[in-house]
Image (cartoon, rainbow, N blue to C red):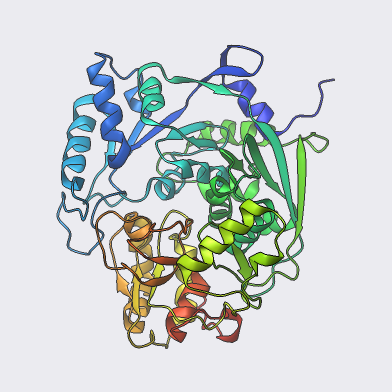
Length: 475
């Protein structure tokens, strides 16, 4: 009888083309995603080497990173200096090589990590790579996804394989039932605080436990999205019945007999009950409060009811120096309450929290309310399909009536791509990174859930969403 195995062990073993050494295997890659920011460079390298794509039918391309998200945008409109050129180049290359392209004007266009599960391109047990560190997002539906550079992307284009070092395994078990007002974003923000931005280096993280099992698929995608903020390359939730229900009937999902066979296989790759992991971490979220970042790394996070920590109480010199730097940049002081800090802007979007459930969560707070005077408030849906469904439900009316801008799909202001609207402003954001200048020169970013961002937009300061009753519409 074979030893119990984890999802990681089963999926990795099934993709080994050949071992390279004791620690490295040549893996078969099931899907490659390209976007215009890094994909154009990849295709240039492929052509310069006089190589061709081995399986163009397994290459998917979208325009998401540098495209303008304003409604009424043109096909090449971009706030980035070279954005229009990258869009045109990627579009031409996709046509030349026969890659499937979700272009501006396509109802399926959107952020790569949003549309890949939404369309059923990402499926359980597949290996999926993209030139973006948040490719681990697709672990939320039980795929093994990770980010790669343009050189590795070229290798996948040419050979449909990639040499990869086998990671160690970590299981993060989240127990308890999250209280009202707490979401997957709050769970993963607390994890970054507890584990740290380097705690997952060299590991693949499996998320398990009652709290994870209770999360819907879009929440699991949020959880896995921020795996890279833990320093890990891979993060996943093994597939279960919720996964199958989510994927059934999607455009690229199997159909008919192929669907039945796929589900049988997907069930077989779930982690065995007695599987062993290299390390274990446990978190009880029964008393979890909404979380907000206060500093300049995703691990500098506190609960909404806490005060900003004092670096003088930290023994580690490097960590103490990082905290002092963060206090200076964020213009906050030890002992300040995070709740009540004035904001200039509120942003809902990015591959972390721009799915339909995220927009519903924010709309439940905004319904019948107004954004505080002087606050810039922006919502950028993660995909055009998400946007269309939100509009069918009237969510766009809720956002616009409250004072939010309602945009087309794209990565938007997650990263600074030339649009300086948030320059030197304090922003509460549903994004995943709060580095210095991430959202613009001098911009101070506080990471939070969609509901917390919406509540803060209404208050004009960082707010405890639990103090603002939601107005939920049952669909």
